[in-house]
Image 1 (cartoon, helix red, strand yellow):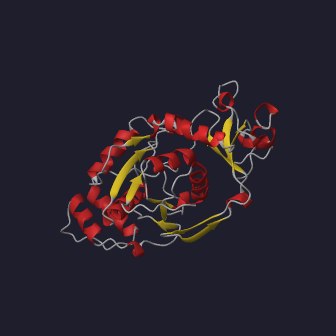
Image 2 (tube, rainbow, N blue to C red):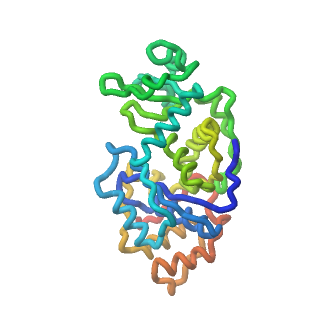
Length: 316
């Protein structure tokens, strides 16, 4: 694993337009913005709009508006993943040429507990031809039709293991190859998998530091493997505690977490800073920009709770 050695900090926030931002989303956006600004670097915005069946009409525009209302302005043009098919296909072609891809028609019921293929598709290969050993062939891996749906998977070498020091979750050691044989990089419906898209786009945007929720901690080893297979640098990682509700359930769009009101940015930012363990801004900081200026001047990463989850405020 080759860690990013860039001198200039480049961070990003990458929401999915499956609904409006909630407080947990704002927490990640704010922390990543503060880390980037504290380092004197760039903060980029990426819209992960590659799953149309789950996307909500108007959500992308609502997210952009909400971030601007909170004073969280990005430094470069928004990268829209829906416009990146050529880049993802190029990465798939490269993985295939190096013999890392295989096609799999297994249903969810036929998969293992981690979503892996357990029926030996990597040994039989496409059309029983053993393409796991030599790549799928251009006409094969590109062929996904309704009457012939197949996912594309990357094989995990049994010896693959990765270590890194996470800013808030501490030392990490994941012997991925001992627990997972393969994972999806293109779905059976032809849509690109998150693991592939995020690695390709982090490289394209020269991201040096990833700040995101601890619910994505277990995605990092898979991304490390793809970075290694594609010859990309590995960013530094900082996984924040996720916010939970009164019942201990993670705040998420899937769990119907309430949307934050873009017209009350001061209240929202104060709540997010409290969850991040930061010094509360004084009452005289009564605009979003004033709160952000105070938060940046007093940003203390060591005060962020070094745990997987924290309880969110009862009022949200």
